[in-house]
Image 1: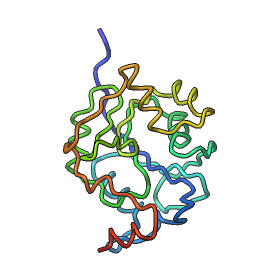
Image 2: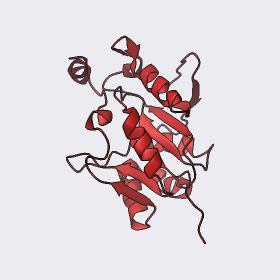
Image 3: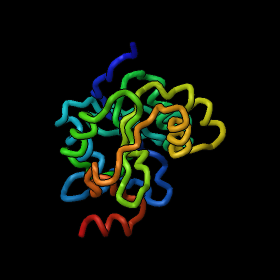
Length: 189
Protein backbone atom coordinates (compact mmCIF):
# COMPACT_ATOMS: atom_id res chain seq x y z
CA UNK A 1 0.00 0.00 0.00
CA UNK A 2 1.34 3.48 -0.90
CA UNK A 3 2.32 6.18 1.49
CA UNK A 4 -0.43 8.67 2.35
CA UNK A 5 -0.12 12.40 1.84
CA UNK A 6 2.49 14.19 3.91
CA UNK A 7 1.71 17.52 5.50
CA UNK A 8 2.98 20.74 3.95
CA UNK A 9 4.91 22.69 6.57
CA UNK A 10 7.42 24.70 4.54
CA UNK A 11 7.44 27.44 1.96
CA UNK A 12 10.26 28.59 -0.27
CA UNK A 13 10.36 31.94 -2.06
CA UNK A 14 12.56 32.18 -5.14
CA UNK A 15 14.46 35.43 -5.59
CA UNK A 16 16.23 35.27 -8.93
CA UNK A 17 18.29 37.90 -10.75
CA UNK A 18 15.25 40.06 -11.56
CA UNK A 19 17.06 41.48 -14.59
CA UNK A 20 13.97 43.34 -15.82
CA UNK A 21 13.37 44.94 -12.41
CA UNK A 22 16.31 44.57 -10.00
CA UNK A 23 15.42 44.77 -6.31
CA UNK A 24 11.71 44.21 -6.91
CA UNK A 25 11.33 41.86 -3.92
CA UNK A 26 12.22 44.70 -1.57
CA UNK A 27 9.80 47.24 -3.03
CA UNK A 28 6.89 48.41 -0.95
CA UNK A 29 3.23 47.59 -1.55
CA UNK A 30 0.83 49.05 1.02
CA UNK A 31 3.73 49.97 3.31
CA UNK A 32 5.38 46.55 3.39
CA UNK A 33 8.04 44.96 1.21
CA UNK A 34 6.70 42.38 -1.22
CA UNK A 35 8.84 39.59 0.22
CA UNK A 36 8.00 40.76 3.76
CA UNK A 37 4.26 40.46 3.03
CA UNK A 38 4.75 36.94 1.72
CA UNK A 39 6.85 35.87 4.71
CA UNK A 40 4.33 37.32 7.18
CA UNK A 41 1.39 35.56 5.52
CA UNK A 42 3.16 32.22 5.18
CA UNK A 43 4.34 32.27 8.79
CA UNK A 44 0.77 33.06 9.91
CA UNK A 45 -0.16 29.69 8.38
CA UNK A 46 2.46 27.97 10.54
CA UNK A 47 4.91 27.48 7.66
CA UNK A 48 8.66 27.77 8.02
CA UNK A 49 9.86 30.13 5.28
CA UNK A 50 13.14 30.21 3.39
CA UNK A 51 14.14 32.59 0.63
CA UNK A 52 16.34 31.10 -2.09
CA UNK A 53 18.38 33.85 -3.73
CA UNK A 54 20.83 33.94 -6.61
CA UNK A 55 22.33 37.22 -5.38
CA UNK A 56 23.41 38.05 -1.84
CA UNK A 57 20.32 39.10 0.07
CA UNK A 58 19.83 39.92 3.72
CA UNK A 59 16.36 39.85 5.21
CA UNK A 60 16.32 40.34 8.98
CA UNK A 61 14.65 37.39 10.69
CA UNK A 62 14.32 35.40 7.47
CA UNK A 63 16.40 32.38 6.49
CA UNK A 64 18.06 33.06 3.14
CA UNK A 65 20.02 30.40 1.23
CA UNK A 66 22.05 30.86 -1.90
CA UNK A 67 21.02 29.33 -5.23
CA UNK A 68 24.33 28.12 -6.64
CA UNK A 69 22.79 26.96 -9.92
CA UNK A 70 21.60 30.35 -11.24
CA UNK A 71 19.37 28.63 -13.79
CA UNK A 72 16.09 30.44 -13.16
CA UNK A 73 13.27 28.96 -11.11
CA UNK A 74 14.30 25.38 -11.89
CA UNK A 75 17.71 26.13 -10.37
CA UNK A 76 16.02 27.56 -7.30
CA UNK A 77 13.92 24.42 -7.03
CA UNK A 78 17.07 22.30 -7.41
CA UNK A 79 18.55 24.18 -4.43
CA UNK A 80 15.42 23.56 -2.37
CA UNK A 81 15.57 19.86 -3.15
CA UNK A 82 19.10 19.63 -1.75
CA UNK A 83 17.65 20.18 1.71
CA UNK A 84 14.22 18.57 1.80
CA UNK A 85 12.31 15.52 0.66
CA UNK A 86 9.12 16.77 2.31
CA UNK A 87 6.34 18.63 0.49
CA UNK A 88 6.57 22.41 0.33
CA UNK A 89 4.99 25.47 -1.22
CA UNK A 90 7.06 27.21 -3.90
CA UNK A 91 6.42 30.84 -4.85
CA UNK A 92 8.20 33.68 -6.53
CA UNK A 93 9.45 36.27 -4.03
CA UNK A 94 7.60 38.90 -6.09
CA UNK A 95 3.97 37.86 -5.44
CA UNK A 96 2.45 40.48 -3.11
CA UNK A 97 -1.11 39.16 -3.11
CA UNK A 98 -0.82 35.56 -1.98
CA UNK A 99 -4.24 34.64 -0.64
CA UNK A 100 -4.59 32.99 2.77
CA UNK A 101 -7.79 31.07 1.94
CA UNK A 102 -6.34 29.80 -1.33
CA UNK A 103 -3.20 28.57 0.39
CA UNK A 104 -5.25 26.78 3.02
CA UNK A 105 -7.36 25.18 0.27
CA UNK A 106 -4.21 24.08 -1.57
CA UNK A 107 -2.76 22.54 1.58
CA UNK A 108 -6.07 20.74 2.26
CA UNK A 109 -6.19 19.50 -1.36
CA UNK A 110 -2.61 18.19 -1.41
CA UNK A 111 -2.58 14.39 -1.71
CA UNK A 112 1.01 13.47 -2.51
CA UNK A 113 1.98 14.38 -6.06
CA UNK A 114 2.91 17.97 -6.89
CA UNK A 115 -0.13 20.28 -6.95
CA UNK A 116 -0.10 23.04 -9.58
CA UNK A 117 -3.11 25.35 -9.89
CA UNK A 118 -4.34 26.56 -13.25
CA UNK A 119 -5.48 30.16 -13.73
CA UNK A 120 -8.61 31.17 -15.60
CA UNK A 121 -6.66 31.58 -18.85
CA UNK A 122 -5.53 27.92 -18.62
CA UNK A 123 -1.93 28.72 -17.64
CA UNK A 124 -0.18 26.49 -15.13
CA UNK A 125 0.97 28.49 -12.11
CA UNK A 126 4.25 26.63 -11.57
CA UNK A 127 5.54 29.29 -9.14
CA UNK A 128 2.42 29.09 -6.99
CA UNK A 129 2.42 25.38 -6.28
CA UNK A 130 3.11 22.58 -3.85
CA UNK A 131 5.93 20.24 -4.81
CA UNK A 132 6.25 16.81 -3.19
CA UNK A 133 9.95 17.02 -2.36
CA UNK A 134 10.53 13.93 -4.50
CA UNK A 135 11.30 15.73 -7.76
CA UNK A 136 15.08 15.87 -7.28
CA UNK A 137 16.02 13.20 -9.86
CA UNK A 138 13.85 14.75 -12.56
CA UNK A 139 15.10 18.25 -11.76
CA UNK A 140 18.74 17.09 -11.90
CA UNK A 141 18.05 15.50 -15.29
CA UNK A 142 16.38 18.62 -16.70
CA UNK A 143 18.61 21.34 -15.21
CA UNK A 144 21.53 20.97 -17.67
CA UNK A 145 19.06 20.97 -20.56
CA UNK A 146 17.91 24.52 -19.81
CA UNK A 147 14.36 23.39 -19.16
CA UNK A 148 12.15 25.55 -16.97
CA UNK A 149 9.51 24.72 -14.39
CA UNK A 150 6.89 24.24 -17.10
CA UNK A 151 9.08 21.54 -18.63
CA UNK A 152 9.38 19.93 -15.21
CA UNK A 153 5.60 19.91 -14.80
CA UNK A 154 5.22 18.42 -18.29
CA UNK A 155 7.62 15.64 -17.26
CA UNK A 156 5.78 15.10 -13.98
CA UNK A 157 2.52 14.96 -15.89
CA UNK A 158 3.84 12.12 -18.07
CA UNK A 159 4.62 10.08 -14.95
CA UNK A 160 1.46 10.96 -13.00
CA UNK A 161 3.49 12.85 -10.39
CA UNK A 162 1.47 16.09 -10.58
CA UNK A 163 -2.12 17.15 -10.12
CA UNK A 164 -3.16 20.14 -12.20
CA UNK A 165 -5.86 21.86 -10.15
CA UNK A 166 -8.54 23.49 -12.27
CA UNK A 167 -9.23 27.16 -12.96
CA UNK A 168 -11.05 29.10 -10.27
CA UNK A 169 -9.73 27.01 -7.39
CA UNK A 170 -7.20 29.66 -6.29
CA UNK A 171 -7.85 33.40 -6.09
CA UNK A 172 -6.59 34.91 -9.35
CA UNK A 173 -5.01 37.91 -7.58
CA UNK A 174 -2.77 35.46 -5.76
CA UNK A 175 -0.95 34.72 -9.04
CA UNK A 176 0.03 38.37 -9.65
CA UNK A 177 3.76 38.95 -9.69
CA UNK A 178 5.91 42.00 -10.21
CA UNK A 179 8.20 41.67 -13.23
CA UNK A 180 8.43 45.27 -14.45
CA UNK A 181 7.98 48.80 -13.11
CA UNK A 182 4.63 48.89 -14.96
CA UNK A 183 3.50 45.82 -12.96
CA UNK A 184 4.33 47.65 -9.75
CA UNK A 185 2.31 50.67 -10.81
CA UNK A 186 -0.61 48.40 -11.70
CA UNK A 187 -0.64 46.61 -8.31
CA UNK A 188 -0.29 49.87 -6.37
CA UNK A 189 -3.40 51.27 -8.08
